[in-house]
Image (tube, rainbow, N blue to C red; front, side):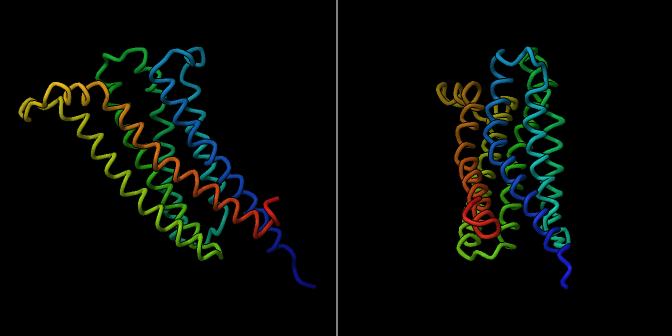
Amino acid sequence: MPDPAPNAELLRSLGRLVRGLSALFWGLPLTLIVCVETAESSNLHSFNVLPPVLTTGLLVYGLRQLSYFQKQERIWIKALDWAIMLGLVDTGLSPFLFWWNQRPDQEFYVVMVSLLAASGIIFLSSLNLVLYRLSAMLPDESLRLETRYFTTLNRFVLLAILLLGSLFLLWPRFSGLPVLPLNLDRLVTSGGPWLIVFLALVPLALTMAMVWKIKQVILDSVFGAGR
């Protein structure tokens, strides 16, 4: 009589995979909303640093659930480990959003929040690589092609956002650089962070769409009709 243990183990890993994808799908927009709200308003101040820590931690939890699937695939696990490390960096830096809101004049807090923004963009890029590696292990050719196209597009867009954000951050700090026109200077100094958030919505939405589609493919093919 065949040993059912491997099938049971595979089902458990697939269950955790779906759970992790769900955590990532809901955690991505929630993290963006909570982090912006913590940095820009006082609505969450009664919770201190807890909201951004919890939401960024939710993303790490989701990635950890993914790590139970296909542990023997070294390329897949390497991509996951890199994303988890960046997620932990985001979690460690997230309290500075609250402290920066309290003391926006502190240069140290400004630097830490800037590092968090850069780390968040790199994390989203690494998550796209994780999704590409995951789709390569699933028996759906159209999903693999679609995921490869959109993850490549997303990573280029995120690289452009990272470079643009660096420009917004560094330009006002170097007196030797050319003086910008007044309207453009106001955009760089005051509207730059919001422009970066707005631009990041496109790759964020595409990433969420890919997470959802991969999850549905797994549910439809393994657990039956999306149940």
